[in-house]
Length: 551
Ligand code: F6P
Image: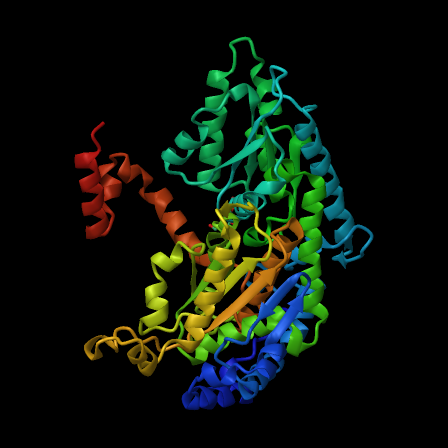
């Protein structure tokens, strides 16, 4: 199963059916949005209330999409993932981020190893460490309590923790904050270190491989920053031990860096970087929100895992949403997908999803190496509402492109504020409801005319409607709900990858740029021989830099 050839989806009967359905499809949400349809298309998964009714489908299309999932053996591949088969074929690895959130006492043995016991052993150490930092028992080398935790990591070792740190702001401990350094642009470290007191700062170096140029450069830079600024009599070795901890799968490299192995937290090669925020990579978050809330987050992930694994296909939310994305991308020509959280605290959620979805499904060959003959991963993007409304919604409402969009909102606000008599959260939610309605139903030329608009302006003021959206709501943005949301998108990504027959768990496409950056480095620093080896455009750009470096 794990290494066998993927089914070419275009050879399935369902694909042929869907191609015909797409050609004949004439969306008319004004007539399809009946109470009966809305009721049937509104699904529950854990705490998530998901309204699929404003998508461009009907029963026949849904039936064909579910048949497609069966014809590409999706249920078997899902089971292969959950049971630890090596479905990451190009890296010959299991894909077991779902094991990170199995409750203690559950059992999953992979290659003779009790994975759940391993996960909980690290989790318990990480929780104990986080508790010591939170209580002030863990101090800096001069005995002062830690006030700022700086996570140094990039990609999956940054985006998940920072997204969740922002999202769960109400759950943070007072007097303890986190900052996140990721970019190798020295501005990032320069800005994030600004104003910090080295005596009260703890660095967490987060890197799955502990070989990432950006992270190791920033870690060394921070170590120098720390040692240069601590009081002169501070013991340098003890300072690194007290102020630097690490999270990695490469614990030998952590030791080489000078970090005490007792202060290192491991994870496993079966956790992909972009699927790792619920491993020890979430250590900064654990410190910020505390072990109990982190455990709630994990429980939320697990709730969605169970739903995805066991819910019937017709009411399985990740399956249905993943198949809808395939419908839009492969049959209706959508190139992008917007994710629009009506929750300011989720302002980094679209950025997080960009790595999750695009590093996973941005592939041009199937997992056996054969080239695909259809489009794969869409461009995911988004901004919190209502900011997006005043920026790019124009294109979604009246532009020529199809942009399926997920709208996310919460019944209860993080901040309960009023403007006189007006409950501002309700005003905010009114925008959420209004936008999906406007996108679905639009406004006809006759309706515009009925408002007395001059005839020459009628077409400009008409809204075509039939713009697809999914509305996801939950009672509140709690740790458990955040876990459910992230797991939902992990599984949507998986569904799409399986249908397209691609390995959603490798990321070879990031390697070439990394390799060239290493090779080019000397040219940037003035090595003329290396510069001469470059293509004319790169040579000319480096020359421009040399002429204008100003130092
Ligand atoms: O460049 C891609 C990538 O490998 C991501 O998949 C990963 O999340 C990121 O780099 C960081 O890698 P690491 O955690 O090994 O430093």
